[in-house]
Length: 158
Image 1 (cartoon, rainbow, N blue to C red):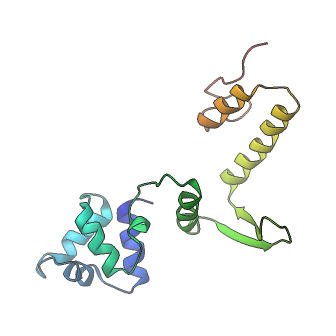
Image 2 (cartoon, rainbow, N blue to C red; image 1 turned 90 degrees about the vertical axis):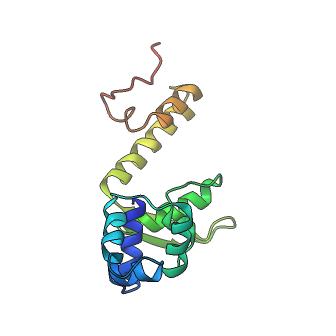
């Protein structure tokens, strides 16, 4: 989701009109709705100070609105899952494991095809059919490295 998509999503979730949100973040009543429409459509990009105002008015963490990633991949995955719930069905399955409490399934064609390929490529790595370097090449170049006839040739010729 873009910043504009997130602002629109949160505005609607809070039952605010564009004009109401615009006034709440400090825009003049005369053009408050126009300004919000510009941010939601991506015509304008809010500066950090305005993003902070949006977060406060919309009662959301600033990182929920921003597209910035943190250095913590787990935190990034959580924020991505929040966005993903708008596009796919996520089901949590309780499991009894000492290190995990839940397994997750995601009903999305692209995601499930990726997982199928990841399992297959990991098996090739484990079975010694590809090198670790090839595995990394596949991962960092996905989706160009994906499929039977990938655009990015990541397998070394043997």
